[in-house]
Each structure stands twice: as structure tokens, then as C-alpha cells.
Length: 79
Image (cartoon, rainbow, N blue to C red; front, side, top):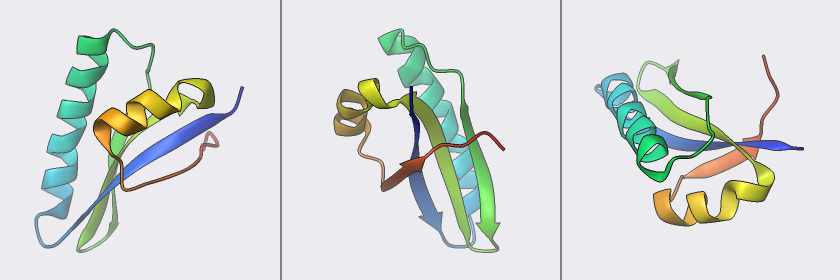
């Protein structure tokens, strides 16, 4: 089954701090909805750009996408 990485982008001097905090809310949503999602995270892309993300099975993506409104998504490949 293909996995998708849903991504939220944050820009500005506090981008990394905001992305880190956003991951907390993603984990809260996962617990609240009792979802089987184990991959979440945040990462600095550049000095003023950071992302928060979660990885979902493609079959479960639509309701999560509609509820959480990520900025973008991509096919997930384990690094």
C-alpha cells in the first residue's frame, strides 16, 4: 500500500518553532480520532522555512486531508 506524506509549510524567523508545535497538534488529532498513524515529524528546510508532516496510507488520506487541510502532499519513501 502506498503511503503519502501530508505537509504543512511554515515560513519566517519562527518557522521551526511553529512546525514543532504543529506536530503536537497532529499527534493530538491522531489520538483523538484513534488513527493508526505512527510517523509524524517536523524539520527545517532552510533558515526561514520549516515543515510539519504526518504519513498516512493512501486509502485513508481523503478524510484526514479534508479535516486537517495540509498545504501539500507527496508520496512517502522511508529515508
